[in-house]
Every structure is written in structure tokens, then in C-alpha cells.
Image 1: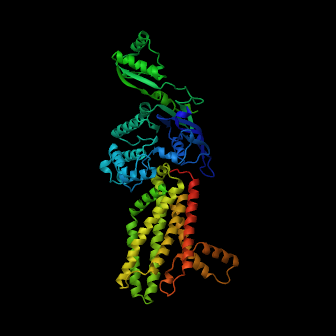
Image 2: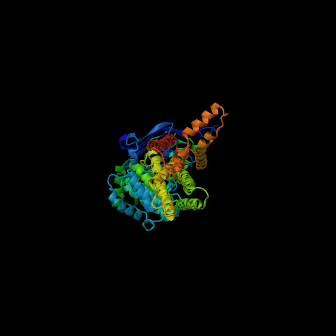
Length: 322
Length: 256
């Protein structure tokens, strides 16, 4: 597993000393996280669960009391940060620079190997057009709306073509169009095999965009779809799903018996579609081929975290504290 | 080096656009011109008043701006959160502090150039021609005082909140101006311990070392060796404050 991990957090512990008279606050308590290369992994949890502290520790903004961060199996160095992009929770941009200047600065800092400085201008234009800010390129950051700021943050985080991008609540404060754009951009990156760490509260985003999920609570990891955590409800291994529309579970069962198809791990019925969940990719492919040959309407087929909404919500319930 | 250059470019650009830049340049030039007028109408020797008032105007305008900017470039980055994004990129904390300092240095240089234009205007206004090298040295030394105050301000801003950092920097600026006069004003009855403590403080922290306006009117100018030792001492102070900034900034958690 280690060979295919882009980032690993090992035994991370951080205690904040608030002041002399208050008790110490354990922000991270022996947190172990793994992020596979080329996948989109969600980092989920309540406010104050330790997600942002984990991200800040990954970047060295917060010094951990114990533990380490590994990038491709080796301790993360300053040079490795060249391959990482970061989009923080809120728009953290220099207020009196223009959109164009923010990206110039980012390129100067990251100095991407495959992009010569004479091509910076074209790269900036491409990036700003992609997020729909080209018309506003001369506008100062302080004058941008929140949604435009989020788009600029995205452009800033991805202009140097990182191998790994860490997105902290990328959808927060966005209107429906912004949501749509952001999920399209995340999907595009995912398709390009860029590794993504997505911190979010949005269950639909986890379901739609992520391959794996880590759930944190009170500074601890309480669930991981990658590796079972002690005390975890169940180890979730179903990651490939096929959604068909216009058929029933009974019809699919009889199809399995008659065609000798492999059995599914789980079947979930939603309002207009039925999802079949599989542990192994080849089983999912056999079902896809069978459905297509029978002329069934396949509405979705991909890898996912394997968690449904109810399971995700259950981890937020107070009685689930590990 | 690249990271330092990138941060300093960004800082310079932001300071150049800062709302305080133009007023500071105008007020500074205005004060210099007023010192020219005051010396013209004054009862004392023209050049003495001109240099005394001019150097005070130069020092106070620049040092105040340096303190304000030194504080602002750190605390603004922290408040708006761009500090977090920049330190998440391949920039070490020390490189970030140095980049901020060099950006401030460039902005102060630009301000000094504008003030120098004001000073030159006085010279031309009174038909005294172009500025002599002596004046350029005097104002460069005063500007070194600004740079020191900028480094002091960055030092405090890197380890405290904006308000505390501003207070401490102004307090240290006043100490630097008063330490030498206090030392000179001590009476012979002052206890030896007190005298030693004041002398030690004034020996370490005396901003008058960078004010050469007294040499402006005499025939003898400061010796080259003395000048170099003062420049060296100024650079050493800047180095000490920046090193301390880097040291403390490297040790703390960045939580915006």
C-alpha cells in the first residue's frame, strides 16, 4: 500500500496550550491517515474535529508534538511542496493585488519545472479563462465577490499543476453555479489522475467525487474507508458501483441467476435508480457489460467511497464518539 | 533566493499601492520644504536650521512609515490569511521574513528618492544648485535609521499581535532617540550602577549615531572610518533583528 500512497500522516499529535490557567486542548490525538496516489480522498468531520489542524500540520504551519508527514514515502520537504496545491477554507488572498498578479506571484514562488517564465502569461490567461475570471483579471482581490474569490483561490492552487491538491471546504459560500463549476473542476483534476484531499461537510460531494473517506472526530480518526480503525463500525470495502435506472432489485436478482453474474456486495434503492456495489472492479465490469447488453439504462458507473449518506451522518452523531 | 525575490516583489508592489505611501511622501516633502522656509525666515544661521529641521523631518517621516509598514506587512498577511497560503508553498519561514524585509527596503528606498527630490527642490529654490555628496551621505545615514526601525518592527510583528508590535516598535524608537541625551544629561552624583546601565543602553541602542546633520554645516565631515563603522553597526542591528525575527517566527505555530 505504501508504494501507492502520495501522502501519509503518521501518529500525529498536537496539544495546544491555551494559557496558564486553562487546561490543554488536544487537537490531534495519534492521527494516522493515508492518501492514495491519483485518488480523491475526503477528510470529513465536525467543526473542530481537527481537519484544518491536520492540513496545517501537513504544510508545517503547525508544529506537531509527535508524528510525521510522508510524501511518497519520505518525510515531506520544502521541495516536495512544489508538487502540492492548497486551497484554504476561506479566501486567503492578498487584498490589494489583482487576479493576474496573484497568479504571477504563485508562479514565481513555485517556479514549475515544465513551465518557462516566458510562458507564464499564457498559463495565467488559460487559468483565468478556465475559472471565468479573465474579464476581471485587472480587478483587485479586495473587490471580488466571495464566489469569484473562491474561483481565484482554485486558480492559485492549481496553476503550477500540482500532483496533489488539498482543498479545504472548496464549496463553502458558493452559489449553485459556483458549486457546479467547482465540482466540474474537481472532477477534471481527478480524471487527470491528480491526487485530491477534499475537506468537506457536503455529503453529496463525498458521494459524488471521492474514492475514499476518512472521518475525524475530536482530533481522532474514527473511520477510514482505506484501513479499518479500532472501534470502527464496519470496514467499508465496497468501492465500485453501478447505477441503473428503470429496473427493480428483483429483476436484477433474476438477471444474476440466469446469466451467472457475480454477486454484489450491496444493493441500494434510490428514488429513480438502483445502485449495485462491488468490492472488486472486474465484478463491476461484468455487471456493466451485462446491463448494457440487456439494454438497461446505466446512469452511473465509477469508483466511490462506498459510504451512503445515512452511514456518513451516523458518524456525526454524538454517541458515535470513539 | 527565488522565494525571497518573489516575496519581496509582492511586498514591494503592495507597499507601493498602500494608502499611506502617497501621504507619507507628500507630508515628508512638505516638512522638508517647511524646514527650508523656516530656515529662510529664522534668526539663526540658515544652514543650521535647514539641516536640523530637515534631518528631523526626514528621520521622523521615514521611521514612522518604516515602523508602520514593517508591522503592516506581517500583520496584514496574518489577518487576511495570505501568510498561511504562502507558507504552504515552497517558501521557508526565514525566506518569507527576508522577502518581506527586502520588499520593505525597496519601498523605503522609493520613498527616500521622493523625499530627496523634495530636498533638491529646496536647494534649487534657494539657488544653491545640485545636492552635494555630503547631503546624500547624511540622508542615506538617516535612511539607514529607517531601515533599522523597519527591521525592529518586523521583529515585533513576527512574535506579537499588530497592536503590541506597533507599541513596542514606537517605544523602542523613542528609546533610541532619548538614550544618548539621557546619558549626556546624567549628573556627576548619579550612582555608578545607574550610569553604567544607561551607558550600556545608549551604547547599544542610539539612533543619533545615524544622524549626521551636525556635520552638514561644518568644514570637517565625518571621517571615512567612523562613517563605515556606523554603517556597519547599523547593518549589524538590522541583521540582529532579522535573525531574531526568523528564529522566533520559525518556532511558532501559524494559526490565522
